[in-house]
Amino acid sequence: MDKSQVRWIWISVAFSTVVLLIVLATTFDANTILTILKLNLWFLLLATLLRVASLLFWALRVRTMSGSLGYKVKFSHCFNLVVANLLAGAITPGQAGGEPVRIHELYRADVKIGDATAVVLMERVLDGVVLVIMGLLAMLLLGNIWRGLNIGLIIGMFFGLAIMIGLILLLFYSARRPERVKVLLTRIITWAGTRWKGKTMQKITRYADVEMDNFFASLHRFTTSGRKGLMHGTIFTTLFWASEFFIASLLLLSLGQPPFIAESYLFQLIIAIVMMIPLTPGSSGIAELSATSLYALIVPASVLGLFVLLWRLLLFYFNILIGLVASLHIFRRELRIKDEKETAASELQISENGR
Image: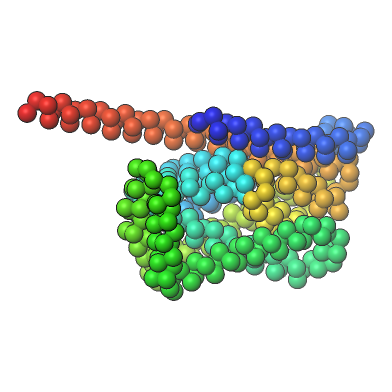
């Protein structure tokens, strides 16, 4: 891990910590101490286990979708790439850094770059579809709650929904009209190649045409022969988000509060969509403020700060911790691959010199 990544981790953690301290300071009273003393650790453990289960669902989604394109990726590799992607997501605006990590790790599992890109982008599409459907259901079932929501959050949610719907439409257009999209992408890559010269850019330009063909072919397969993988991916996507959203209800139970399952699902949905907007690293600060303003509608002030703290510990700081472990595993593997390449090149050089 280089210095810039470490710096972004500290920046992201600092954003989150400052906002959490402010929330705790403004909600802490005598009842807060009583809530801490009565904290139900069993529900806290269940919330942690459910968090791990949600990551398992994500790994299964990657494995089945890759399998529908003809690749056999080990489940352990899929789980490690999902966990490593959490760290990248925690230090990049809108959690966008996770996608390149997943693409790279699928490539290391012998998945072509174009196919890996198609899998990861189709994951985003499935996320968008599932979240949009959940949002529509929430609007129908909990219409009264909308009147009490902060207007900024509502605008942020609809802006996030617009981005997701735009991505979905773009990918469907790419599958229907790949030649037009390919021409546009080729022009962008050619322009970039003339602007930023170097070996890396030359390599990208050289392989872009082939990998774009793989990418569009993969998109087409997802809608034809790979429909089974897409169907399984939808199931695991639904399980992933359902698990993620139910964690908040378990945390409320651990604090002696009602689970507020329906309301909590709506709030988590709004937060998830707002967090996709690239504003701060890992959406730190944004997530805490969003959760505070939403749960203030149903949770007593004395408990609110504790709830937001536990929620972020499990869905942000926990991400960084396990993401560091997974990234360390990848870092060691990359060093080993580099050493093997250097050894092979050295032996080839010695062999050629001996002739």
